[in-house]
Image (cartoon, rainbow, N blue to C red; front, side):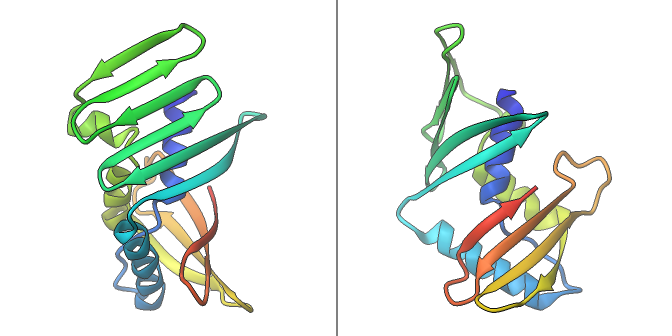
Length: 162
């Protein structure tokens, strides 16, 4: 559950892609990603629904550093060391994750993966929102697709559905 939760939270913040076939969708996603990356810090809350269970989580990011809080788990990463606390066991795991391990929990690592792993297209441009569909280029990707809705004026994410 922890790995799924972190992957879904990471996907929430993963809103960038490269797709030469649709430069307009790509441009909107780049603008949104740039705003998030250039912010001093980013905080988001989300509801994650999986296998009939709903979980609330909060993530705070600043550069490569992040903190994720959810019922039952908390994870901190300072750019080198990662701490994960499990409320059910009362244990803290401390690691210096490899790039592969970090990609499982670090939202910025997932953002980087989205730059080469997804195709995007605008599916709706109604009113003050733009809805962009992102489809995995590989059928064995952990996240097959995402629908990203951006505020048309600010290009900030309004919602992301996986």
